[in-house]
Length: 123
Image (cartoon, rainbow, N blue to C red; front, side, top):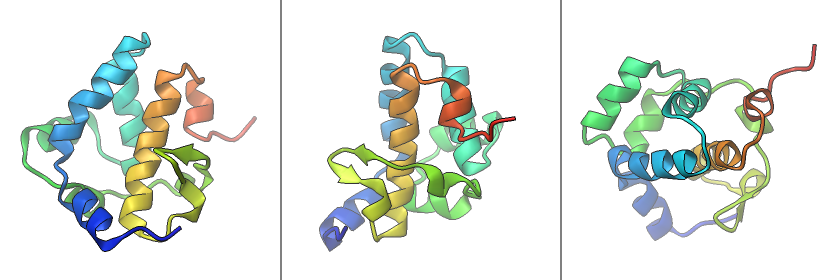
């Protein structure tokens, strides 16, 4: 999927701290916890709780957020539609990474089991 340069720039300059409260509201409204939200963020990005707290308190953009992240090796397994976009068809890496995070938060809010959200192998 092709996204416009304006869309890419809007996502790149969006502040993580401005979106994070919306993630919290979304998951808490559905009975999930901030700890679970952080577990999802940690899985995708490699950031621990103290790093997530630091990023929330800073003015870091999503572009810098994902430049500093170490994306999980199974992130490519995140598929589906989020915000009207099929994730696996998004060409721009930053936009795809942001949509990965959106999709994980959405799955958490919808009550999906954590092992499925985190794309854990069946034992």
